[in-house]
Amino acid sequence: MNQTQQIYRIGAIGAGLSVLLLIGMAFIAFPSGLEYPGLAALTGELPLNGAEQTLYLNAMRTLFILDGLFLLGWILSWVALGKLVHSRLPLFGLLTLIFGLAGALLDFSENSIIWGVIQNFASGAVQSNAWIVSWKAVQHLSYWLPFIGAVFAACALWSKNLLDKLTAITGTLLVIPAVMGLYLPAFAMFSNVWFLLWFAIVAVLLWRRSSEII
Image 1 (cartoon, rainbow, N blue to C red):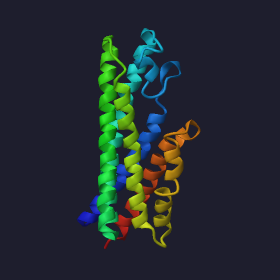
Image 2: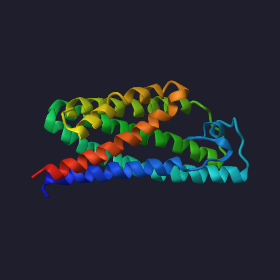
Image 3: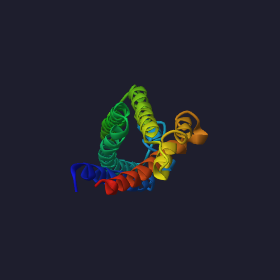
Image 4: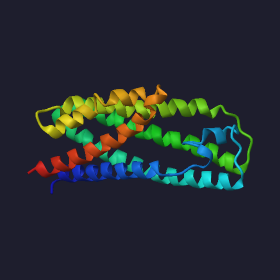
């Protein structure tokens, strides 16, 4: 197995890991109808009793562990994807890599912001809500950047091959409802479902391409 095959296979495994972790994170239960990151609880709008606070903090810790591993899979898969796209169109390969990795970095930053707020919340310290603006800005970009990276990848990967076409469609047409989900509550789920579909198709694509290299 040559180096390119190894990179593609590691990337495929990383993408597959990301899919499994996204599914796992969807099953994490929060108390009192809260959803990530529990904004109502963190701002004091929804007071939690002792048991609810413990459940909330445990859920967030589990979520951050899984999300950290998800981001590791994201990085591995996007490096391999960038290399594959680079073999077709070098400039688009570079842009795919830059936007994809920048998105992962901002996701890490988003986690860091929330984690800092949670530490204050757990200690009972009084805190302002100024962090919400920064968190929302970082979160917003952490979606937009991989969407843009996927579009560059899709444009370079389009070919007569069915798997290439499916990847290209996921990275272009399906990005539209994902973007709408950032602004329209009725489409909110599509933003996260898109990541699930994207990493699933990328896992198959990279594994297949690694088998085709002689």
